[in-house]
Length: 269
Image (cartoon, rainbow, N blue to C red):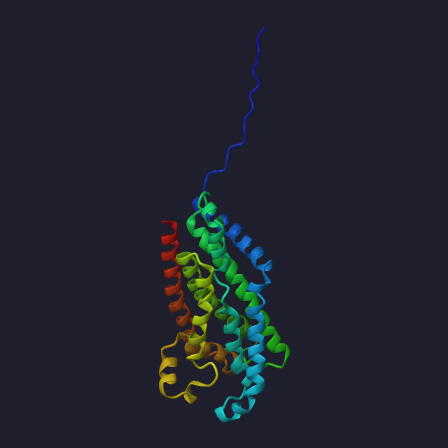
């Protein structure tokens, strides 16, 4: 009598693909960041309420100055300032520093996820938050009577350009979070926003500035970002101003991302 042994074959495991798994890990971690932000209104509401408040205060209180400064579309002049306040908030890196303080970041390092995925996932979620905030501020401005010179196409470019700037600036928040692992140090980055914004053409056209403020605005990248945004909002498609804004974003982004990568390397050590 012959006995035939039954054999079972298990399905072959899918081959490991480095880049596929890195993207997958970044997506999963990014989705977690989004859920955490939605559960923490303190990370979202100030970045919406402060810019909207700023926009209506500046439009209402300084409208008489518009004629003296030669600005025809006063609402469009101040829209970029409000959007910058929205995208350059102080919440970048706060979720990550909370993970470091709670020990969750150390647990992530025990997983096979690529270390860059941890940073890219967090920054992707932050970029999504920034896009939503910039869009909400823009829609509120339009709903209250803003005339936008370049129409829908220009509005999309404005939101994208502003969001890229917010992402570039958020790299500094992630750099501080990774380097210090301290929530108070990360939150203090908000105070750097003030001189960075106010030493520029935030309140008046560049030709109206004088003395040391004019000199500071010349070397401030926000000046060139505002020029590109205001060109889209007030004048039309000006390649020079929009190109200068893109160059400012690329310069700050290169610096901030480099600092974030160095801080990540230091944290991994």
